Length: 227
Image 1 (cartoon, rainbow, N blue to C red):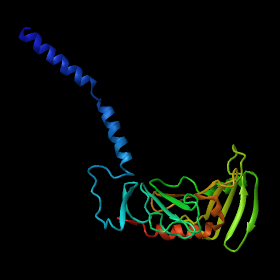
Image 2: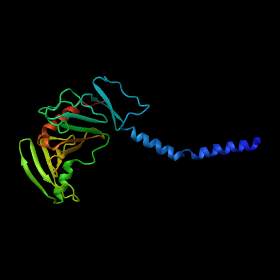
Image 3: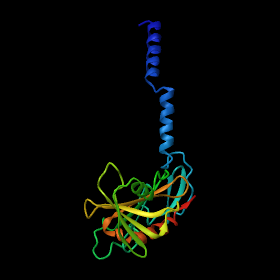
Image 4: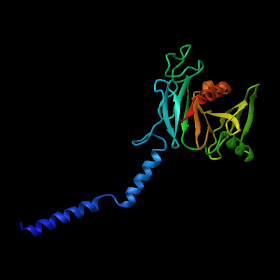
């Protein structure tokens, strides 16, 4: 092969390889995707604040760093303790009285996004729109209601309200539980700190302890510190 065809083939190959590479738009999209993902996780190149790793772990949410007690941390913003003994899941103490370990877990998650709505807003909307809602019981620290939260879903939810507590937003501290099965889970979600929220999950058998559970969640969250 003469010199000219060889040079021509090499140049053509380089042009084809360049054409197969990502465009500027694709590169920008990839960079933006990575930027968003790295708001809620530690990525290469991050300057992570120094902490006592024997006592705390560093979590990154909404681009901010937090120290989380190691004994409560379950990774990716999750914190866990047992109920009724309030012991961290990662500690040596197991659930008391032979409880099923999964049934005894109180889990709550630090989310890198604002709470779009709180349960009290959903209850207020349901009442305003005339959906089924009824008081079940009321005691010194707990109120229980049954409410159809969504217009398109006829199933009703049990709503547990801690009467002497509010979420950081100032709205009533509520948790909601499904009613299809006696072992359904309960959940709660609320705004916490700037552009952050907390999602809670626990077994329905502990629903009537909601005021005490929320008090313990609040105590543990007070141990989570911005860095």
